[in-house]
Image 1 (cartoon, rainbow, N blue to C red):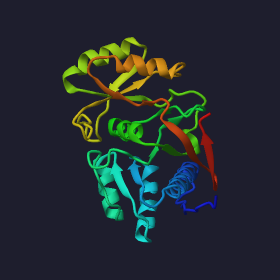
Image 2: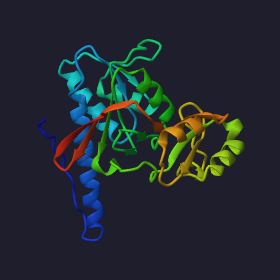
Image 3: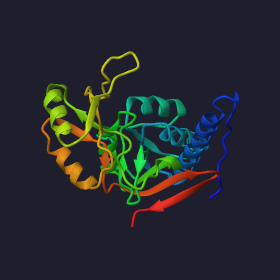
Image 4: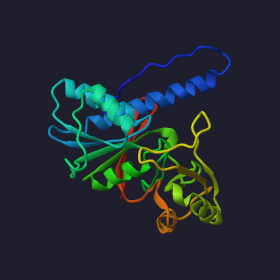
Length: 248
């Protein structure tokens, strides 16, 4: 696969390592996003993910649309819908296009079995609905998202407001450190669906499938960010190339 290159910048000696790291991460995200966009065929219905890596895939798909590619996108968030419209991608709802050919989305963590933690961007419910409706889910990421075991990234859990207190207590009883997600101005974060998110730090998650079942059984939990058995392919930017990982 021909690598795509992006430019980074360095503004000071102090903080140079962080700037270089950020530049490397952004370059890898763009590489992965552009590689995923090349998997889309003419006439496809495409699930459009949310987040900093999916951003590059949406822009790359917009470039292909402007050169003649015929697709329809089903966005996973209001923000992605706005980005896709600006890129010139025709959009539809799941009611209009319930069968999705390919879903392209990012992840906060990816383990060797392509089990994921998602939801850092707040769109986990719609992302999971679209991933489950797709014939194929392709997850895209920079190399820092590959982990041997899920759990370093806090697991997002979307909750109905009515159940905030009992859900928080129940998940804390499972051994997690929990806190409600807030915006930069201190207000409670609300998803596009009007629900708050509980960020749950479990540490190393030894059995993601068991935890996923336990969380799903808690009354008041709308959805959680464990994506089990959904991604079949991962495209991961690593340096100046893209690594393809397939679930066995």
